[in-house]
Amino acid sequence: MPPSLPCALGLDLGTSGLRLVVVDGAGNPVLEQASAYPAPFEDPRGWRQGFQQLCGRIPLEWRRSIGAIAVDGTSGTLLLCRHDGSLLEGTLARALPYAQVCPEQAAAAAAIAGAPPGQAGPAASASGSLARALRLLEHAAGAAEPLLLRHQADWLMGWLLGDWQWGEAGNNVRLGWNLETGQWGGRIAEQPWSAALPRICDSGTVLGTLAPAAARALGLPRECRVVAGSTDANAGVLAADPGPEDGVTVLGTTLVLKQFVERPLHGSGISCHRVAGRWLVGGASNSGAGVLARFFSPGQLEELSRQIDPARPTGLELRPLPGRGERFPVDDPALEPVLDPRPVSDALYLQALLEGLATIEQAGWQTLAALGAPPIRRVITLGGGARNPQWRRLREQRLGVPVLNRAGLSAALGMARLAASKLGTSLGPP
Image 1 (tube, rainbow, N blue to C red):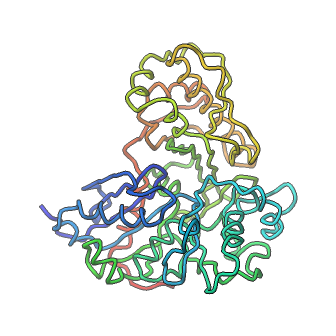
Image 2 (cartoon, one colour):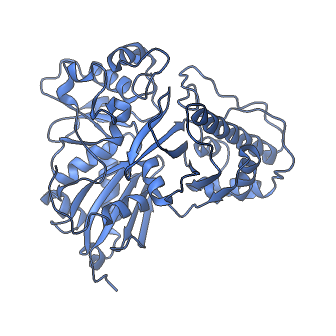
């Protein structure tokens, strides 16, 4: 039966695919869809096409009831586009993904971001969006028309609105937006390319209604509100609704840690966001379940995990990075993975990889605590890795606190609930 009141839709542009959740006006989930990207992750056309395909699978009577949309994306995935949102040609038609390190731009990014020595913020490193922006702009030098720098969620939000001027605050922290001052940090706003920067709005801002072209493509009501979303990790936190002593770990393709604090924290590789009126700090490692997929299929992971005895450590000390470079708990573009030695037993090797991931997570919480975050008393786990009970026990042993697996709480659900909170509110940006 179709709902009697307007519903809300949340879309998660994740690393490995798209997920869509529809909730009723009270935030209760009523429908969920997921799919792989129909094009390579770096191709923005696949983000839009995948969204259209997921919407096409929503029953028509439900689509007609959707009154608000919010979108999250991977923090740091950045592209250049024209003012009408259209993509450039050749390699510049693709985004630079969040894990793309640009070591040749590190010094320039640090100088422009103006971070104090030894306190490099999220924009002042080779792994920040600012370094990726400098690479994109260098490759586009001599372009005959003005261009825009937009993150993944902001570009798709622009398509929904038919207006690409906006950028959500959290998605632009790694580009240099300072949430405390409400300005671009350092000398970013003084650069000759500063007109490419987005006009920043807060997460949850109602920016308008669907553009006619987007409404037709998605089969959604023209009056549907477009709500500024967030990053994928922040969206997951909104779904988890953690308490004051809880940490949130997202075990997806990458490993993400988040924690609410009373005041902002600063450090290399640390992100600091303003979510639901509170300060949220954390970091994202390049490591995660994506490394496991290089060695084992989903079926193998399930079967081999059952053979693991968490009470018997392997004694191996692996560093399961997908390649050279790390963002958090250390920001080191030269850090190498350690994936050997590999035991004869596949189950032992999987256990060693999981132990290595738990060590990275432990170091992440220790890094946050050293910067002033309160000690965590419990960890809520989201993402596909939250379905693995053996991994949970290995992490409990390493972290020394209870670990709750909540695999059903997706980033898309967090965005849907954010959108639902804006049903019936006034239209238009501030």
